[in-house]
Image (cartoon, rainbow over all chains, first blue to last red; front, side, top):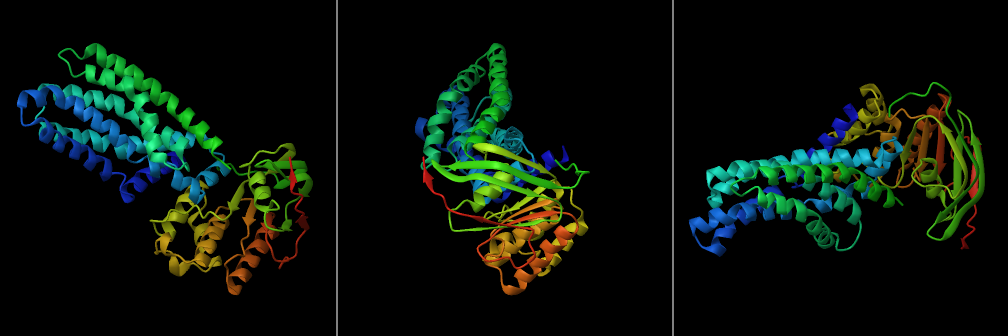
Amino acid sequence: MKAFIALVAREVRLAWTGGGLWLPVVFYLAVATTFPFVTGPDKALLARTGGGILWIAALLATLLPIERLILPDRQSGVLDQLALRGWSDELVATAKIAGQIVAFALPLLLATIFGSALIGLPEAQLGSLLLGLALALPALSGLSVMIAALTAGLSGASALGGLLLVPITIPLLIFGAGTLTEDPGNAMQLLAATSLAITALSPFAAGAALRAGRT
Amino acid sequence: MSSRQASLPSLSLDNVAVMRGNRLLLCGLSVAARAGDVIWIRGANGCGKSSLLRLVAGLLTVMSGTIHSEGRMALADENMALDANVTLEAALRFWADLDGASAEARHAALTDMDLQNLVHIPVRFLSTGQRKRASIARVLASNADIWLMDEPYNGLDSASCTRLDQAIIARVASGGIVLVAAHQPPSINVAISLILDSQDIAV
């Protein structure tokens, strides 16, 4: 367990030093800032669509750290060294997902408070937006690690990552948008279930991809 | 992950064959090593020295034959596996902590490889030879029973080569097993000298 925490701490440190921490957050806030330029300062329209835009922005921000999640560790031999020490690939993937939840999901949740203020989201919606994103972000963290493991070393990895991520996240997006309505209860439950399933499965998919990529 | 083996380390390969990218790289290879043995592996480029070490490490799967090993292993290959943006001290401590190695073992490894003066320098600023010494220090600090060293002498100055010789001698004297893949003839007493011939059989 101590070793697992050391690995998660290393992931968070790499995110701090490698720009992985602030880059998605800045991107996320930049989308929130630029959106009113397109729609115009129509308060009612922004209130109706702003939550959905923040969901899309969170989804796209997930793609940003993909290139630095697995490939550097494979190239520098860190993955080999962990395998040599008896770490299963699934456990390594779990540590990376946990690191993403700390270094990506939590900062993004904090940024949502600012982002919703920038868009002018009604305060009543902020609660369900935060709860919905909090439910979905572990799944997005899991997917980013899985896609990073699948595409590590391929040319055009980031473009391919986008192609892979968007279809898988459609259920999250549909239920996530559903939570922004007057009665978010049912959508919130479905979102939680979908997120749980994706989060639980992603270490196994990522682990299999790590194993297949070992040469 | 850090369970110490009570029994003596041992390593045996029995009739091992490996395929890499549609090529039969190693075939019918049998080696048995006991505690205190140095295995010196030589051979032309591409004959499978590195693959043999990765095989023993469990990072490659055998096509046929069996590999049996007792004892914890440490690997130093062309990948340093030390984080570039932190100091050498912090990078080595990460692995030493995972291995459950003591601070004394870590400092002894740094001294053995003459790296004490570089501990506060970020890994990315180290030279080629210093990187090589750092990855050897990672193996030294790991306290592992079986050392797998891929071309450890490459890029080392003569003083560092002597230091590495001494470290290997000390490890086998205390009951370890060291596998060295190298181009040059052994500079120390070796128990098994293995010369891989490039069979290069396309399948």
